[in-house]
Image (cartoon, rainbow, N blue to C red; front, side):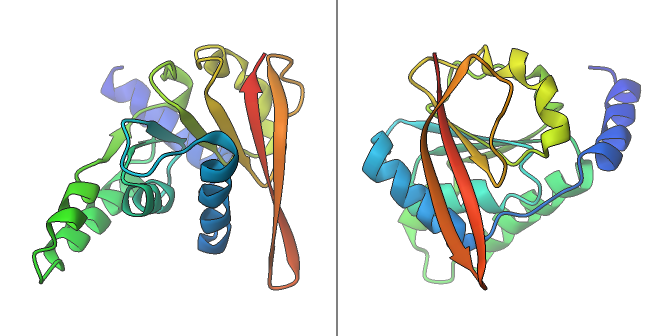
Length: 187
């Protein structure tokens, strides 16, 4: 993709798709649920991708807690840089030289790209925090996912996507607010 086109999409995405963070308590519940219901295996060859990875919270959590390949796709260059800086700081602050920590951090990859150009066939777990207004544009992306892949949608159900079947739902209570996470597979 040309730099001009990427710059335009980066600008447009900041208007239409603002960065919204995922709460760590919810992430803990999501990854426990993935282990229990969807066979997420710690330190395996499974792969996780976060579409619109923001500041990298989800992929860093995944790599540190689950030790699997964790890829973030983010169009905003400032958020990509923030993610890279967070990973670099974690590596530099590893004062005791924990090799396992370094191995887990090396499983993180962040890519500056438009999530609408990504194909998903390589991934076992696909995470997205999408606003309902964005969802009508996601159909062609999920068509590239494997049928056994688990698609995780934080906060908002993925509606009007007939190629996806909801297979589970998780609720987490934070500060008297109920947050839902929806799990799908391709039909």
